[in-house]
Length: 307
Image 1 (cartoon, rainbow, N blue to C red):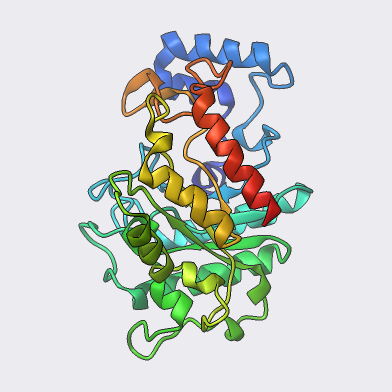
Image 2 (image 1 turned 135 degrees about the horizontal axis):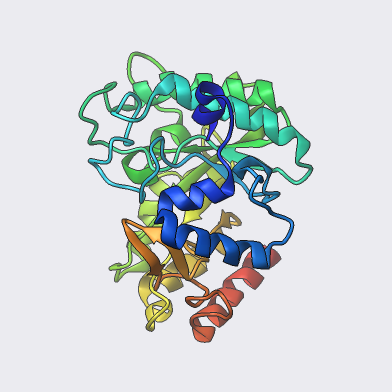
């Protein structure tokens, strides 16, 4: 979207976006369904004017289902991951978001990972060299919002950031170096759905970044589990993975978000009206997919709020 605005003279309308994604037969049909339920939109409304206020999260430089090791969006300098455009986009959205009174935060990049066919070296020193300037740009553009930092290996590892370890070439991430330290948040993802031992999960999550919430960490910072989830079609909510996270998040007094709310997609990986069995909502978003799973989740919400 930002590239359209900066390089092509303006944003794209919602209607044209649907047509491009779904085709000229189904695009107009779905667009009319959206208009029916959202009469404040019209054919001239652009994507940036929708009035949907969220935590801003930079996922992909070239739109596609996220994420894979060969999608060209993996790492700084990959086929579609133009670093200058990425920083420009973050700065633009941080500035633009000033007019939203309920904008709280922005994530710099989702699930950094190896696999780039070209680009910069995949290591923590490169992470430091690219993330710090991006942090500075965002804070300069909008000093009020929180800045979420994601780690390596699909955002499952943040250990050297929490511990202040040497990232290479003598570089260290030290919270005390930033005047806006109180605006920085670490984020982690976890999908250990095959876990059988909560103690092992706890140790792994703690060592990979959640130790930043402890009193002995070099960089004491908030850590948020910004992605976890499982199928809502069966009894996965009773298994070790789900019950362990339900225990740990309130225990560590940390934030979390579930992937995913949506019960279906307009299009996913080329398939239109795609069913999302991990979705908390059913296919047409009219009810919960599993009331039992939601009941378990409500217990986690209650425990987290008490913490």
